[in-house]
Amino acid sequence: MKKIWIVVLFTAVLTTGCKNKTSTAESDKIASEQETKRNEVEMQLPAQQHVGLQTEAATLEQMNEFFRATGTVQPIDSRVGEVSTLARGRVAEVKVKVGDRVKAGQVLATFDNLDAVDLSAQEQSAKAELSKLQAQLVPAARQTERSRHLADIGAVAEKDYEFNKAEEQGIRANIQSQEAVVRGLQQRLQRFGASGPAGMTVLRAPFSGAVIKVQMSAGDVLEPGRAALQVADLSHVWVQAEVYEKDLGRIRLGQDASIRVETYPDTAFPGRVTYISDVLDPQTRTARVRCEVANADMRLKADMYASIELPTTFSKHALTVSSSALQEVEGKDVVFVRIAPTKFAIRRVEKGVTVKDRVEIVSGLKDGEQVVTQGAFHLKSIVAGGELGDED
Image (cartoon, rainbow, N blue to C red):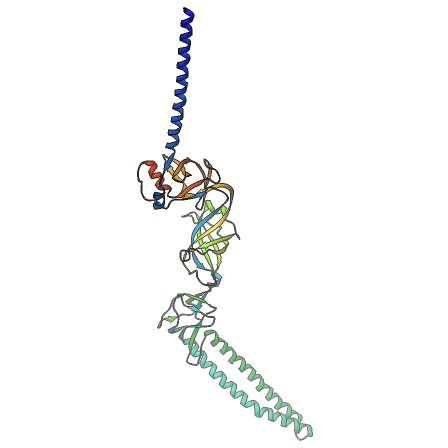
């Protein structure tokens, strides 16, 4: 009788244990399915079209980091010419304004040169004296020739011929001296830019370029050496930026640079780093960096804002996605991976470095998986249980 009860009790215990194991397995399965559903979000195709949802494949690629700085376009010092006067005078007319393009030798302004008036008078006097000497040379040369002929036939003494010859040579020497005086006066007038006896002087462009500064107007009195205009050759320019000392180690002389301006957002102007200051500004802790850029078509204007992009030594082969794919859910970085036409898995990822608009994914994603790039914010809103706002 006891044996029968023991068998019945063992059978009951065994049956109860099997039922408990089956129940636990089913519970784990249900919990797993619920967890999977919690890590998924669904969006119907019409809603995807409405928000413009787009995906792209996570890609293994070479990431190259670039350093960026903001600066301004400036003329190169050696290509800037200051136009000034060598004499005192009153401005008669200014023929150009800031921004005008000029050719080498083009007249920029005229002024009444007071010093040139005196020089012009001296030149006229010197020319008159030269003409007088040249007039005296003609009869003197004839007399010398006559004396030589008479001396040859014994009609006059040899000393008379020598005397006439010396007189002719003296006149010729005086002519040469006076010609030097006239040339000297003419050269001084030429340096002044005087164009006539009235002393009207012109200021000319030293080379082709653009007028970047005008510091005079009609009626102004100019003093010798005063800078009146500036002309700059802008066929090559500097893009000058202030770089923080912590970033100076990422830049080197001679390296290539890419320059961009807002006026031409789709154009990259090639440049080269030509100067890194050896002195820091004690207030801003920055150093001046200059890139030289070719500007033959004159699209870069003086004082334009520009951005400088320089390649650094950082280079890495990594799995990347667009920065727009990353969202933050409950303080964690996630991406939405398409697993079906209307279903997306919420995948927690670990991100690495960011270069431009590409983000390195260290873990949580595989090469080739389709992640949502446009519309990810709307999926995040669904996960949060409502609209959180408009996507940027």
